[in-house]
Amino acid sequence: MSSSDPLLSSDSTWAFIAIGSELLKGVCEDENGPWLARFLQSKGHRLIHIGLCEDNEKAILKALDEALARADIVVLSGGLGPTPDDLTEGVLSPYVEGPTEHLPNPVGKAYGLLGRREGRTLAALPGVPVEFRKMFEAELYPRLFPKGTSSDSSRLTVKTWGIGEEKLWNENPRLWDDLAAFGSVSSLPWALGVDIGVDLRGSLEERKEKEQNILDILAKGHLKDRIWQVGELDLSHYVFKLLEKRSLSLGFCESCTGGLASHHLTDIPGSSKVFKGSVVCYANDIKSRVLGLSEKILKDHGAVSEETARALAQGGQKLLGVDYCLAYTGIAGPGGGSPEKPVGTVGIALQGPRDDVSGLFHFSGSRTGLKEKFWAQGLLMLARTLQG
Image 1 (cartoon, rainbow, N blue to C red):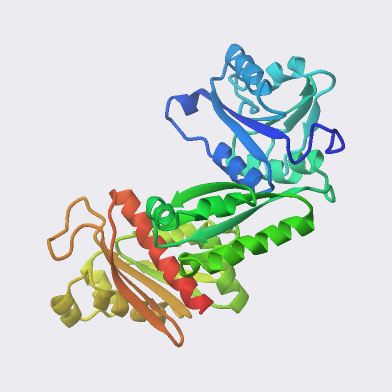
Image 2 (cartoon, one colour):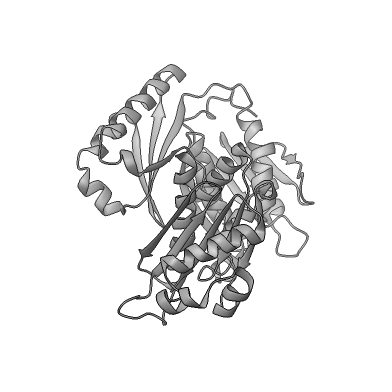
């Protein structure tokens, strides 16, 4: 079973089904479907359906029938463990035509399954996200599309900052059509900007030429100064790569973000190469006793200010012994704001070996949404500094 089968090409359509009654009860959220969508997009494939399914035979069979009627390749997650409600193997084995191939699990005990029905490909992987992702990348995808298999599609992703989706397209009314001349266009908003994707088809040389044409269009337009990456890395990974390449270290002083920036960075395997530590300095006395923030700065400018952020970044750089220190101090709400400094106000400062940058920013949103915008603004500040 490989890409030599005419059905398994870059044009093959994919469907995903997450099995688990707990998903439908809101006990937990499915992480595998969104991850799979991003992975397949990066490889130039189309995921056309994501579904959730109860842990019972009738529901699983119905979900399989519906998915197979729509897609060439169907991937299931969940229902492969040792508990009584793990029914996937028992349902799938008689459902497929011919033998069911077992897929090894390099990070867990539950193996995966691979089979065919009516000329379509069926695969089942464990629902645990780390196992699902590792098995898909290391075991399933290479079997379906062996290394060296030619592909006539790829995806170009351009990541922007500091502009919302509506404003981006309103201020650049011809851009969508200009990009669509080279491939299917997608627009994905994130906390502080928009990711623009273009699916490219053709030979490698044709796709490279299309990529260059797209980049030339963007370089001449209003967005040229709002592009922070051409590629698929998320913000934390991108900053990590910039620091790693330069052998630079990073630390945080986090008040309003409460450790969120540190959390995002330490989610990256190998983050210890650049990340040395952080201080979560929520109370003013911690800011003063640990990081040396003066009473005068607090009295003259307040805890939420550009001046306080700068003092925290300077104190954090010395305390942590890092090349760069990012400091956050703000108001995430829903209370605590004032007419002068409303909810959504945040002071952010970056102290580096030869440069320092700071600012007072104003955002809107929920408490959770504001914290995400706060940490992302700081990471963008660092990324742009490292980019020069």
